[in-house]
Structures are given as C-alpha cells and as structure tokens.
Length: 354
Image 1 (tube, one colour):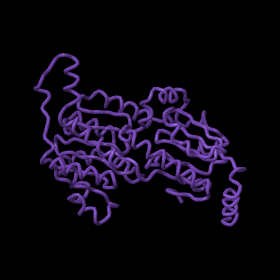
Image 2: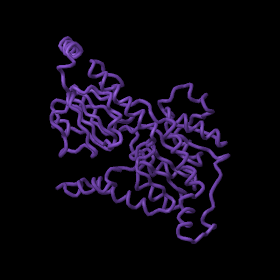
Image 3: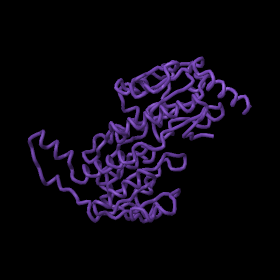
Image 4: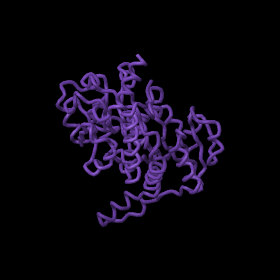
C-alpha cells in the first residue's frame, strides 16, 4: 500500500500539469482570497464565506481548508468521499473528528504557530478592560451620566496571575505580566521542565493556582480530559473577587458554574473571547439550528447560558477575535498555502493525526 501511495506521489510530481485537485476554502472573507494566489492555477479552487455545513459541502473536494467556526464530523466526512487533506487555518483542531479522519486516510494539518504575541496582547487587553472598568466607563460617557463610585478598578502591579497552559501564548502572557510587575504562577501537566526558569514562572498544581491567583487566564488546548476543568469545585477554591480570562476554548469552563459564581460575587469579572457552542451566538447559525428537527438538550442549555452571560455588566464577551490582526491572518494563510503545496508535492507537513 505504501509503495502504491509513493508511486501516486511520484506521478503527481512528474505530471503536475495533468493533475487537478478540487480545493475548497470555507470561512474565507473576500479580502483574504488574494492570500492564496500562490496555489497553482491548474487546480479547481473554490472559496465560501460561510462555515462548512452538510448543505454547502462540495462532494468532490480533495483538499478542505477551514477555520475553527467549521466542524468536520463523521456525517460531513461521509459526504466527501474524495477528501484526503484537511488544512486547518488554526492551531486548534478540536472541531475535527480526528479518529474518523485517520480511519479513512485523511490527513489533518494545522498552523502550529501564528499568534502567540497576538493572543497574549488580546489577553491583556481584556485584563486591563476588566480591572480598570473601561467598558463601564465608556458606556457612562455615552449616556452622559458619570458615577465614579462604580468605576473603582484595581492595579495589576503586585497581583498574582495564574496561567493555565504555558505553551507559546502562555509564555508571552507571562512576559507581559512580568513587565506589569505581577507575580506569575502556572499550571500545565505537559510543560517542559525548563519552563519554570523562563519568565520567572512558578509551576503549581491547578487547585493551588485557583487558591492563590488574583487573575486566572486560560491558554490550554481543549481535550476530552480537560473539558470543564473550571467547574463548580475549582471555582469554590478561588479567591473572592478573582478575574477570569479565556481566549482558548469555551468548553474549558463550565458556563453554568461560572454564572453562579458571578451571581454570588465570587468572581469579580470575566473576559471571554470564547464560549461553549459559541458559533450558535451567530444569527445565521441560530437559524440553522432552529431548522433542525432535533436539537440536543446540552446545546440548548449552552445557548441559554451564553445569553445569560451577556446580561452581566462585569462580563466582557467578544467573538473569538483574539487572533484577528492583519499580521496574524497573513501568517495563518501563508502557512496554509505552504501546507497545501507540500501535500500536492507528496509531503504532509504539520500533521496532527496518525
């Protein structure tokens, strides 16, 4: 089988002008299309602004490129019998059924790094907005009614920042925190030993981080083992008045538990760029949901909980926007082009499945 596969790759290299693949990009804005001009014109390239759904799937697609707002599950995979490569325009790939892909010989590749500084800066933007009550202050100015008694903020200098996940983004967050004069503690069961010596990070267990941190920020990838890692039990261990920042994945936090902690005053505020079932906060996705004959109870609960979060004045919600800078998008799309070109040449780079 391997010999046949290698022969196919060799034939592609020798007769590339005769080989045409259908390449489909979803979640693409009009302004981004020129980023993919480096792909050979011989291939059939299609762009769709919408996320991937069972209704807009191209059945002949061989190479599929998506953002995290699209989901590739077993039902969509079965509608793409020729699919051989999924090029994620993201670092995370929890929106893809990797097992089903591996069973069918579909390679999944990602963008290993593109926004470690971008997301770290956004994390501090949320942190500063919460700690200085910038949103509330701006709203008061618009209304023409200023009440400084509700605008008391806190200094970051001297506070303890708890970082969950010290990969590239977490490390950059720690360096920014050091510049602000904060003490940094972190939890990451997969951290390299030298991490504790970089950026003056003290590694601790998760329950210790919860008990000591004044501000907690999440930068861990989502796995089946850490879903709802921030739950009612862990929230109960946190300091009263803690702030929580999440620019990673919404499912890391049990939303209903967070709502209860916000109501009780245990949590002073939250800056959330991601939510559970966050795509359903989009009107188009909500409309698609309502058209379905069956909707899971858990999905409906997430939609309701996310709507409740929007009512808290001490919660800042943004639409998975931490990555969204001109520079980061260029890096994402350039790496995606490189991933696809290498596949067309018979080599798979940045593969995340078996």
